[in-house]
Image (cartoon, rainbow, N blue to C red; front, side, top):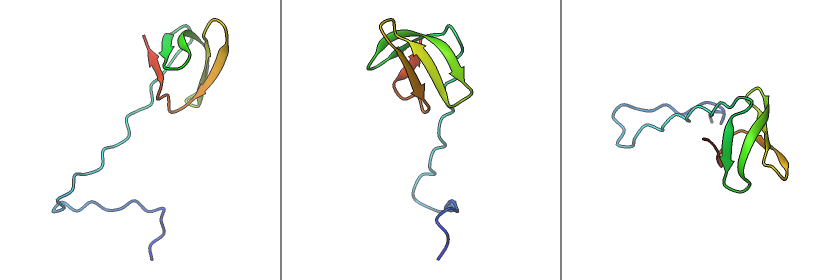
Length: 74
């Protein structure tokens, strides 16, 4: 058996569509205004490379890790 770590090969004659590549992660910088589905409006106050962002939502500060599914830049 093949090890599970190898990606499967896509054959050009396959009737199935090629899997889509993952979209690039959103990049945030300090002082970006953002909105979150759970916490509402906020301002980015810290960025940890491409790992997480620290956001001030007024009443609380939250560290949100990648992927940023519910965090959107305004």
